[in-house]
Length: 133
Image 1 (cartoon, rainbow, N blue to C red):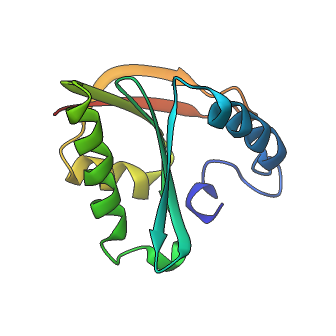
Image 2: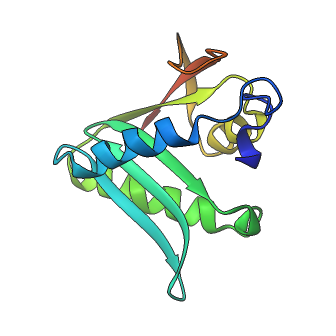
């Protein structure tokens, strides 16, 4: 997880891949969560998930960074949320994920002031963002 290398130092706290995989399998099976695959010419290049008004998960492959794909996928997910009647969406981003924070801030997401900690060591801080749709 190159995008989270500053959040989960691999020498001390490797990214909890197995735990995250188990959590995501449960979320995929949850009818309250909509999951999306970002497909480019038949190749999976990203993913997204939403739950009600929460933009739950989002990412594109490192090879697609800077290509504009993330912005297009983001906008499509927000359009689906808007179509479902969501007026204000929210999400959480690791405080140490500078690239992710810049991405969302450039697309109009604003900090709410609310913070939480993740459930995985070293328990990094999550910043909450919101955006009017």
